[in-house]
Length: 151
Image (cartoon, rainbow, N blue to C red; front, side):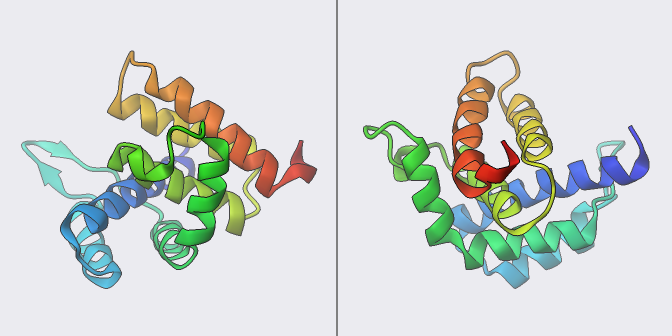
């Protein structure tokens, strides 16, 4: 994987983590972004170096997910089964849907790339589980609504 692509993948993962942290801790966008930018990008934990992230993509995903959260949540709700509104979804998956929804809505990245990247993130959180398939199905539905011309 090229360095540029790896940095974008890391930025997407960090955006999901930042959105999760904001929801669960009540911290502001500015505080969480500063923490990630100053202490997580490229940091070393227990001898393991964290990847550098694409700072511009990270900021854009977090900002767009926060600024357009109501719209993204409505799109996500339409992609979910009626019995499972977004409020009932695990907070990590909810953060993932918000970051992915922000990228699908506000970027020119091909939807298939966005879906693959965020399914990979779901696999990292739930290796071998059913969650990645669920994430794939919901993101596909969201992408078809947001960017029907791409299909």
